Image (cartoon, rainbow, N blue to C red; front, side):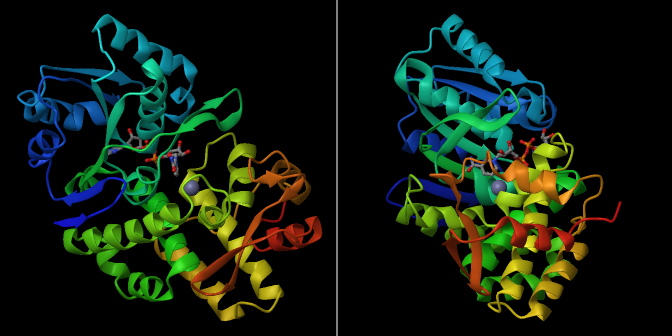
Length: 358
Ligand code: NAD
Ligand code: ZN
């Protein structure tokens, strides 16, 4: 058990859902209603067990299941959850719980942030990406038209309860995508952690429980340190966006057919290329990172796009400030900073490192 005692909220790492009731009661669940929001893949795996466990801690436990997939992370789904809450007479003191991956967490968190001007919610993340990243930090939101995370709110969960055993049922490509963000945490903040991941890569790939637990603990610590220093992303929190400027552009141009964690890793590889060319990171490190991506089945190149299109797509990224892109670079392995001087030419050059020739 890793309880990361925190001023904002607790992150609890467990090997089962069994301690959920205890945690809920500790937070004062008695007499309240709970709505568990989950998607159509996670529901058949875990919903019944979680509902059963929690039924005694609340006056009523209901659930809302939405179809899995990014195309459902939108205001239509939020509206249906509002309708469900209204039908079940949820009021200001009732709670929501997000049981699932980052999509469920973002969607449920946004619903909680806005229903009756805000109700409490719990994160029960079940993907690697959500356990190490998206459930922590209070960013919630949904996509709007073709714009990702365009509508959202900062809304901190009351508790993050991660059952590491749930990773066993995660499809391999989803585990691989999660590793994209995990490795990023090491690159931007903690070289020691980065080396530890590389040393334990076999156990990580085999999803050995004890190693996964340490991995999630390590990543949580980094994400939380960065977030706590700058909760609303005025400056420092932006380092978490390493790999995201080019990654988001690729993700969007590929119509979200590539997984987010994979796009981010690819964006990080391109960003590392800029760091190498600026003499901040040795070339051998970029090679070692590429090999690590390959080890975790993360694609190291993308086809069917032009460099011009990718660079153009970075221009309507949310990370723009007064027309200048806040690009995240490493001035050394394990330390990221916000750079406002990256040119289109540098980005195009870097994209050569990750684009398949037509
Ligand atoms: P996801 O929620 O779609 O989960 C991935 C897939 O795995 C889904 O099909 C889901 O049904 C399935 N699944 C979930 N848990 C499972 C399990 N234990 N066993 C079997 N299948 C399972 O995607 P994700 O990768 O977790 O999250 C991606 C989303 O997170 C994106 O929308 C992204 O924008 C968002 N995100 C948010 C933040 C943030 O800070 N809020 C950070 C990073 C990413
Ligand atoms: Zn991300």
